Image 1 (cartoon, rainbow, N blue to C red):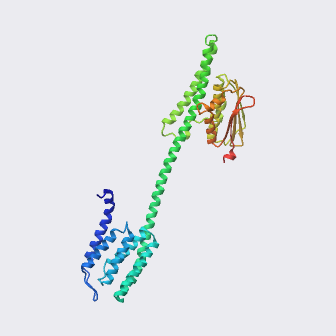
Image 2 (cartoon, rainbow, N blue to C red):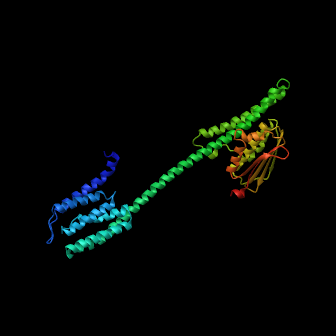
Image 3 (cartoon, helix red, strand yellow):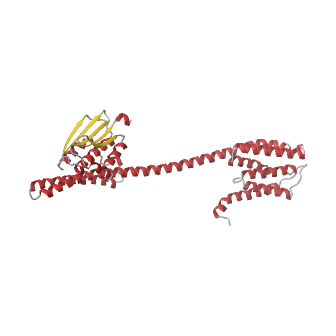
Length: 386
């Protein structure tokens, strides 16, 4: 049983063969024989039908089509049938070979066909030698036509491949951008929420501890909790508004920078951690991405001090390197006994800071100091990044 898809693909070839055979038979039947030729007979009609079959196989089997066309034309010349549209079969078969294979193969078939026709003409008499010579010029035109069709097919194939490649590439780029944006949002949420919740946790513990003996201190702790929670809610609201607004561009998302580090230190002071901020120089051409990364590194580092260190003092040093470079260093004066836990715990603390810094072209370092504290340093050199 023939598969429906195979039958559909073969239908155009069958139609070409049937139509070609019908045209050859009808036209040749009305051609009168020459003075030294013979009239059309059953053999010629068989040859005409065979030529139609050859045209049906020209797309899938061009070599078979060229072979049948050569044989048919040789018999036509040898039996001195009247000239007619049967000669077009030879030219079309050569064009088909050039179209489906290559110019060299088509030239080879043209040579074989010309030699066979010349031999057949010589065998039956020199009067038939003119047609093979005329065939030489027409065969060259047929091969060039096949070349043009083949070149067009190759161009279309190349365009389709390029379009497919671009489609796949665009899809991969879109997926990568989505993943990067999700990672950025996750980092921002972690940095802001972890910082605020660490402050709230410390103040809540302090309030619970002194609420009966020192109500005033408990009230101050509750005020600090309200301030920290308000800042967290404000930043979360800004992020969510960007996510909900489809018309807002990604670069309009809330992106704190170096200028907000001092305010960040003030909010941390409410948790009982004394923070010294030292800012040296001003990077006028600092990239917004670098500024945001620096802010997040300071924020995460101070949060880690509050959560994992026994230190009561910390130092933040921001140093401009040229016009577009920056260095930030966050250190504490405590033993930082649980500092290793930060990196081995949730996996989004020190590792997240390192990923954020390196993704913006910086260098990151974190570890204990010789005096027992913990130091986090991030540096962006404008010359190295350019």
